[in-house]
Amino acid sequence: MMSHLRRDSLPDGKAVGADSGANPDGLIVLRHGERVWAWLNICPHQGRMLNYAPGKFLQTDAGNIMCAAHGAVFDRYTGACIAGPCKGDRLKPVAVNTDGHGGLHFKVTDAAADSTVAPTVETES
Ligand code: FES
Image (cartoon, rainbow, N blue to C red):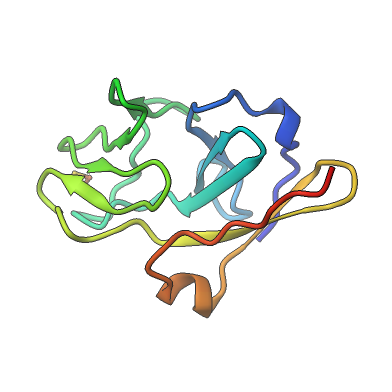
């Protein structure tokens, strides 16, 4: 699962859609400072995509990600659903790696899927 996003092209704190290979908005990607998190864009409530328009996601004042379908709210760092109809469930994390030039690569692994915390990789400078 690949994308051609660059870390320095991501707005700080704002969730954006990214290509999963099968779906142009198949991933949710969020950068905060030097770190980048990614999840599958599949709501654990009813399996819908969370975005309200191509590449665009609702976020609460605290920056957490809100599903546009029924308002489930997901912690922006862990992907855990903290409010709404699937509270206690979580988004499926996607591993994020950077190449030496700031390009981002995403990979869904079994380990990532089983993780209780979205895996992140510290990016090299
Ligand atoms: S499908 Fe996301 S809250 Fe219902």
